[in-house]
Length: 280
Image (tube, rainbow, N blue to C red; front, side, top):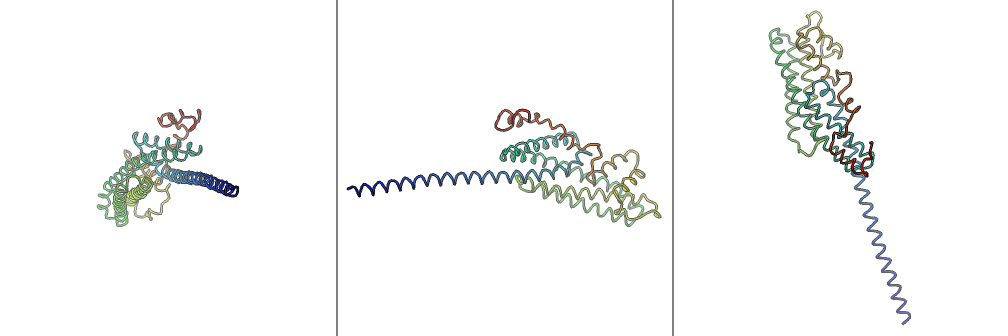
């Protein structure tokens, strides 16, 4: 009888130990799953923040030089949301950070589309405007520049169409496609100016314009451009080389005075102490 009781007691201890082990194992698994999920959220947010740095710097000169009031308003909000995302990331709130990055990139897609359409339009205006003189003078090198300009403008339109048809939720992929299209549009504008400089330079002074430095092109545009279009041409030239002609770029201006209180989401985070402390 005593032996049977001993066996029953030992079996009970074994079962209890097994149950406890299962609970501990399940808890450990849940903790590992939670940690793994958190690490994944951190990687997503970190990668997206790096992408944003590139997207902002790439388009900064275009908005600083040629951006409309509407485009500057969009750019401001995109930058503000990115700054908020960085604050959340530094507080280890990776999921919330990624959510703000997505909102920022959604705005950037709209902004990139407007900028790209404008760049393609400017390229077409320049090429079409200079073409009659090039045809009249019959300068073969200038005609080659025009041909290259029209080619890149057409390629920019094609690249834009591809970007427009990328799945809507693939924000980064779509923005990188727009980056490619904007680069092509800027190349088209450069070739337009090459053609203008070529036909405006005496034959004895001509050399390969595509070997000119940024400063040399600017100097020629100052000399040959009509008064009513000279400043506009110089602004486009600066934009073609990703340089802001203003003393401080629009991106830097916003960073100096982010005014995050303009965002309703920021006010919401402020109201919750676990997110952002007062005064951040």
